[in-house]
Figure 1 (tube, each protein chain N blue to C red):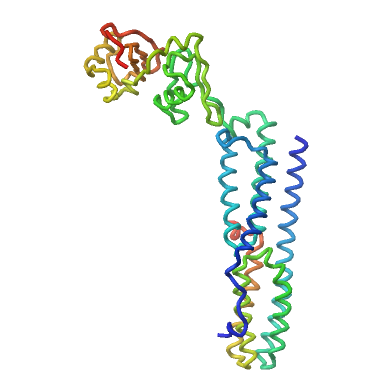
Figure 2 (figure 1 turned 180 degrees about the vertical axis):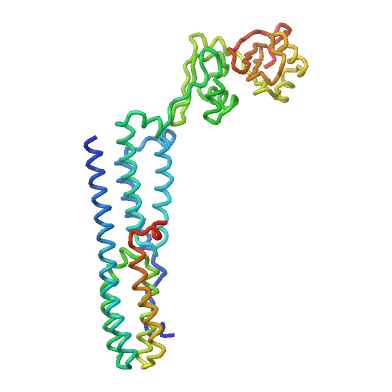
Length: 125
Length: 243
């Protein structure tokens, strides 16, 4: 009986702990990433963005992505990778008009992905 | 457009990765199953069966699909384990919960014969009961004092003291819940009319009132009408042992 209660408490603590950290980590990481993308988008709209700016965003993303693989389905991360690489490619050739929609897509993803982690009825069902 | 310059991370993950994921899921499952104190598969309570079915799927999907984080599977398995432990505590400590969670044993055969109400409650019929009895080594319905289906689905029977003397030949079902079993009627080298007369002789004028009627190779009849006590008798014109 005591052993069962202890196992319940430990398992519950483990699940709740992991769940809270999961939501917190995904939310904060995407928040920072979102800010970086917004800055990049502003610069791109003004025609000031450089290839290095794009690489700086990707550098941040690459470091966070390693841990993000634990929490987020890999297909979602691959989609962000794809769109980001496309945007950086357009910045490399200084095609700002083409780069903006790509950055927009990543902005949308960085907003929607963390939202899908909240304990909202829409996400539960 | 630029995927050649910036190649996508590979979606085709190697066999080594599948191997490691499988090992992790296996170890997690093994620990959880050991902690659950699982009994043999055939002796599971309903909620244990549900857990086993869910866990099998939860373990397989993240193991095989590498696009899903392994943690999804591990957390799901831990959640199922948590639910199992909670149900166990309720099952052991809350009066009345055991009946709701695990069900209760059903006595399907007693001193009056077959209890067809209990059989129907468990979605069983007379032939299922006879089959269960045979599996336990009792071939004649009157050789058993009590028979019951346990809550986890196993079958138990208490034989009569002289049960070996009561089952000298294999009985066959002649009437099963108001219907003749034609093949068995032919096997006894008698006709349906003959058995109608036998039933009339026992005061049963309607076939649909018969719950079960069996005859063994020596002409011993087990007859039970619905809602009545069973009776056994020998057919007088059964001259020789037919099987």
